Length: 413
Image 1 (cartoon, helix red, strand yellow):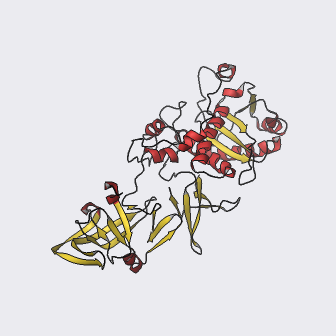
Image 2: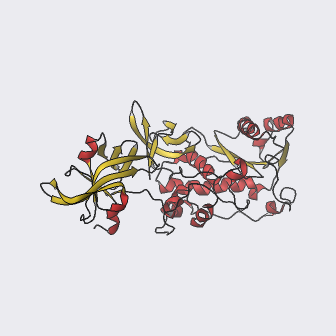
Image 3: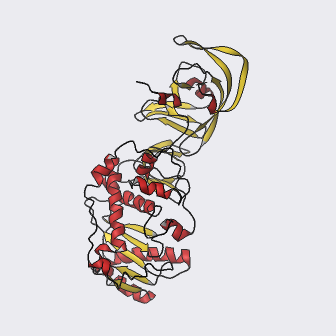
C-alpha cells in the first residue's frame, strides 16, 4: 500500500524519456510554459500535461550534488515523481539493480533505493538514525549533544521504534560496584580532576576476546587523559608487559608531540602486565606509576566497560561477524570522545583535548553497506566499520582482510 510519504521521493521509470516532478518546491530553477504541454510518457501510461520545466539538485548522504536538467513539472501526478533511466543514461548516468536494491549513479552522486521503493529528494536523519550512528547511546544524550558539536542535524526527535540491537546487546548491562575503590581518597581526591592535560593518565586492559579480531588480536588497552577524558585505544594481541609498553610508547609519542607536555603520572590497576619492562621505562622517563588495587570503579575501568556496552549492540544490530569486535571497539571509542560526559561541563572530551567542537556529520551506522570508489575498479562493496582522520574505514569483504581507508566512499544506512 502506498502512503503519502511515497510522494516525497523519486521512483525509477524505464517508460518515460523525461524526469517528471510533481512538487514545485524542489526546483532550483524553473521556467513556466505559456501553455501546458502534452507529454507522451509511454504506450501504457498515455499522456500527461507539463506546465513548466527546470533544474533539480540531486543530493546524496554525503552532501555531494549534481543537477538534473530539463525536469518537467507535472502537478497532476497522483503519488510519485519519476526519475527517468533513459534520460539519466543520455546524460551519462546509470541505474543498476543488485541484491541491495537500485543504485543510481549520476555525476558525483550515488543514490540508493534499498527496498525497491522511492529514492528521497532530501537526505534526512532522525533521532533513531543518530541513535544507531552513535553506538546506541540514549536518545537524551544525543539531544544534549546537539549544542556541543557541529553537523548534528536531527530531522525529527520522535522515537518511532524499539532498538533490537540495544535489547540484544545490553542484556548484561550491570552498574559498577560502589565499592571502596570509589572512595579511595588517594586516587579520587575531593578537588576532582587534574587541571592540565597529561598530568595524569589512566590505563586499563580488557580481554581476552573469545574470537580473534580481524587483525588477530584478543585484547584492547586504553589511555585516558584525566583532565579532558579524551581516550586513545590500541588493539593488542596479548597483555605481556612488552606489548603493553609498546602501546604506551606509541601513545606517549603521539600525545606529548601533540601538546608539548609530558606525562606526569600513569595510573593502572595492580596487574602484572604493567610491571617489569613497563615499570623500568616509566622510571627512566620520570613518570610516576600509581597502582590502584581497588580499580573496579576507576576512570579506566569504567571507560572500558562503557566501550563494551556500546560494542555489543553495534555488532548485534547489524548481525555482524564477531571478528569485527576490534573495529567496533575502535569506533565506540571514537564516538565516546564525541559524546557528553558528566565529568565535563557542557563540552565533549574531543573539545576539551583539541580546543574546538567536533564535526559529527560524517558519522554513519556501524556495519552499514558501503561502496568504495577507485579509478581502476569502480565501486567496491564493503562494510563501514568507522572513521579516521584520512576517511572512512571500510572492510571490503567479510574475510579477515581487505580493510581500506578512503574518502571516496558512499555509505548506505
